[in-house]
Amino acid sequence: MAEERTATLESVVDHGADTRSLVFAIPGGLAFRPGQFLSCLLPIGGERMIRPYSIASSPEQPDRVEILLNLVPDGPGSHYLFGLAPGATLQFTGPWGTFLLDEAPAAATVFVAIETGIAPIRPMLYRALATATHPVTLLYAGSHPLYQEELASLAGLERHRIDPAQLEDAVRRCYLDGDADRSRHFFICGVGPIVPRLRDILRAGGYARRAVQYEKW
Image 1 (tube, rainbow, N blue to C red):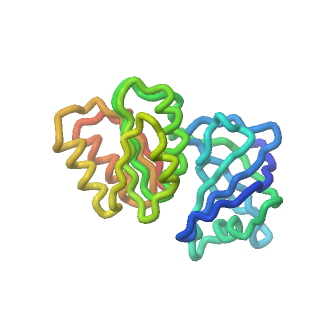
Image 2: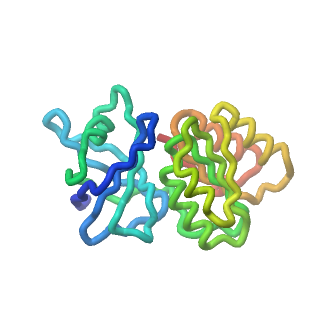
């Protein structure tokens, strides 16, 4: 059985557009890898619902863990978390997940974040930039992009904001039609069918299967 741990909500950041970051303090810290998630155990309706949330903060700060979420209209989990105030506790297990980046690949790396898919990408970017020997690029497709000033300050990051409706065309234009280089690595995260669609067109276009990693919510 997975070990259950307790975190205490330390602060709440309201990003607007029904999006929040919840920052939890974890006694003893939490060892995790960029890209992993927590399984949050939420007491709702007399039961405990399990809801996964990617860790949006850096492993280099293991005693403070941030999760990023949207308020889902009919989502009991997000409504419960939005109702928490500093001082509240949260039970969780983890970290979990295989969408990981421990160090930058030995090739140009492209991160594709769709809306709140920036959550696991954010710590990946820090790790990639700290270890990269090749270019690192972020394509951020979001109606209300988050962490913009922070991302703009990252030395060595080539950053592009893209209309979500134009994302597939941009990927095709830049990385399939634009040149014959198929050595790049991709890390894609977001909500909905666009994630597996990008995975499939990149792999079908000649990129190695293992070079196109993805996480779909």
